[in-house]
Length: 182
Image (cartoon, rainbow, N blue to C red; front, side):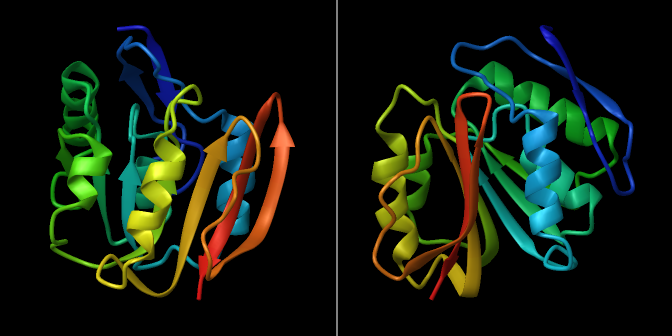
């Protein structure tokens, strides 16, 4: 294990969960997470969440802690996915969260089992995965009307047509923002 993840607020506030070491694993900083969830205040209750590139599960688990109805967490690294499943069991959240050990692009090319209200996209910065994933999420079958997408990257990406940037800022060499589909 490489460290710990702290849940910031909600029903699991202050809980610390073990985080495994994996190449490219870069959890969203507490400060950035706190800002994001302040932006989402009022939009989380009952939301269906998709956390692509879940890694430590920091975003998906924080959403569940703050009232999201369910979360699907996609992580391709087996060790990270296994640690994420253990964290979900530790939180007694197996009825709320599903971990899928798969590549995000491959996952998005399958027919969805459900539509989502909120999607977190936080791929490794050195990759081109953000640009590859965004067009796949413009498809109506993945998103409910008015769905919000959280993006995290080294710099602000070019957004697909019909995506509107609601909020965005930079901190510590990271750009992060919240876009609305519509």
